[in-house]
Length: 71
Image 1 (spheres, helix red, strand yellow):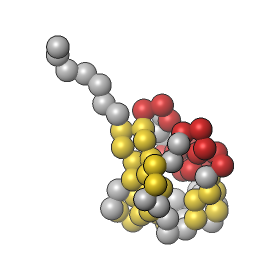
Image 2: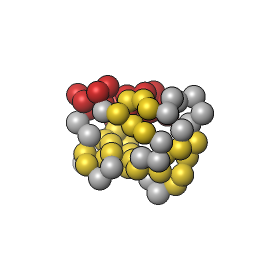
Image 3: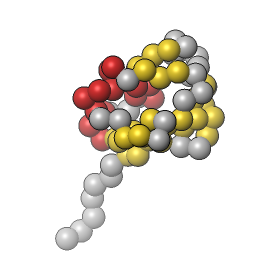
């Protein structure tokens, strides 16, 4: 499967031609509670990732939350 992720074309040979957004998160090795995902131009609610189909060529924007800093 090929996905346009954060502006870069990426290959995911382990993913089926149609899978879920949760499958993509797992393939990336990311912790779901620390990211937000835009799928095809729409923010994907975390609760819907397992039911959100992803197909070859879809566009994803993945944002990582980073904490830290001084007060």
